[in-house]
Length: 275
Image (spheres, rainbow, N blue to C red):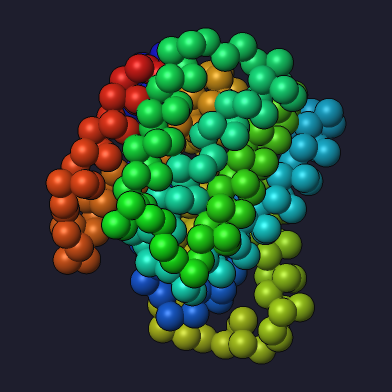
């Protein structure tokens, strides 16, 4: 995997941890997530005006990915209603790299080398270890966190296959994200109502900014998946839990324990093996 893609993916991981911290800190997370998606749709639609559409062969993948992203959004919001960032985020992210590597081998004809599999396993194990408390992952949001990881694996593989047919990673990202951003407000209105969505609230600007950051982070990931193995990109992306731990320590007053440091060390070793 080229060094340029490694550095880009790690930067995307930092961005991803940042917008998740914004979402977790909000009071109405479903509303915040929907505002994020509206911002994603707006930016993507503007970008789509200036670039050619992706190849027709990639459209089914873009549509399926948009649907999967909505499912991911709903599961993530639901998990944060009953669990904290320090546990939900590692479980959701840590359960996906191994699934993606296996799915990429089954559906995208990718070859799994021994060192890649070892690196992915170390990253996944280290991330899940971050979520342990007293040798257990105890949180009411655990089923939703695991479901979130499943959605991450599903849309990552779909996007990895779709972007390779699209002809342009940027075009694929713009069109898929625009679809995703339009679907989420429709789901919000079905679950609640239109009035509460459009009513001005404090934090609207911050939620919209989180959407733009989220879009940039995933655009980088899609670009990386167009030229590198899906499992390797996913494992590097999930090092975002390291940045989440650091953000929690520096800005949210969370502790940085020996257990966290050990888990971070395992993740770092896995990242080096993959790279």
